[in-house]
Length: 451
Image (cartoon, rainbow, N blue to C red; front, side):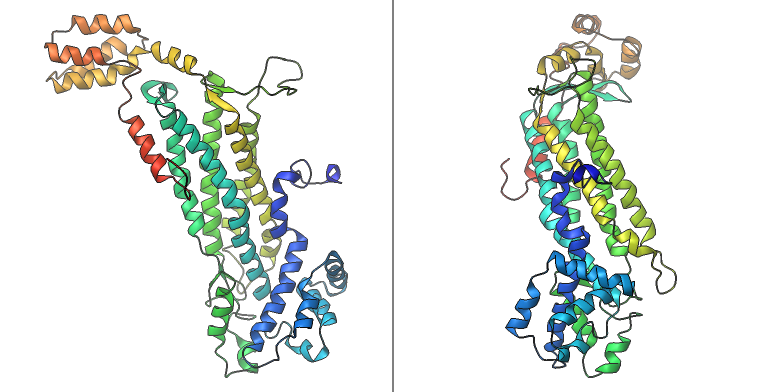
């Protein structure tokens, strides 16, 4: 029962993370390795070393059940070796004449690394990218809706030059799209080269066969990129780069979750009120930003694991030690926390809207933020002390509209310069923010999304 699960990914958050089970559960790992052994046997038959499997033999092996998985686990209690246990179960389903060719010339890692490479590839295509695309779409929609809403920006936490709410979201949207393209284009490596990476056993048994070409073709047929320069194990540099890309996505999303939390805290963003929900056990008025907070926590957990993968997996003693194996079995945990965070951010985005009155009120209360534009207009008019003049009027002070206009009227400037200064306001001084949002919206399309 899920309430007895040790991990919340298989308990509290089972529904959100269940899609990853098809790639990273123990059952999936056993099933896919068994299927790969059969794929290898079929590939061997193309070399003429062994006869092809008959349709009935293949049919008998196409279904992998819980009973098969349990039988492998029973064998493993004796063998203390899961890949050998898989081989023994496959033997039970094939005629004895084929038994010598099961796992022929391979080392366990030839099977394990390919299966995990396939899991990394397929989980990206079927689970992670679709979830990320939904999140990106939610940011695109929010940025589009509020592209022209002027808002007080903050640098170092202090009121600063105005921006638009849509532009602030568009920055994250642009960053996410670049990261999305990076992980989408990543090609996962795998190896099939024997116990020390030299094809020793395969070459000794059948020297006439070009085993390097065989290996490369076999791996490419599975959608992976072959690496034939290995030790017993695949150099995990390639996988580490993928983990680093996911780490970067999660890191920027931590920043995003914190910024959204701050906008909600300041009242710039309102959360939808949902019937029956409670924000506090004692304070009835509260509506907590739970999805953004949950996402931030899960992103941190995921990144802790992703960091360990990039530090641990590229390092192995001589030909290999077994410490990488247990680490690699946790990939689903890192991806589970990642997926959960992305889902919750998307949920959070679906339940918020801008409080335009609050945003306008704050902006109108800080006319000092147009001092950048004012001093630049004065510089263009030839005033060498423009910055210093504005500094003495505004530094550490809050100006309203009347303060600002009084200052402008007191200046000894030509009428054209005075007019340009009077045209400035916190709401109008947004530069090219709207155009920049539109540029991001065009460039961040995924598929046939509109602009």
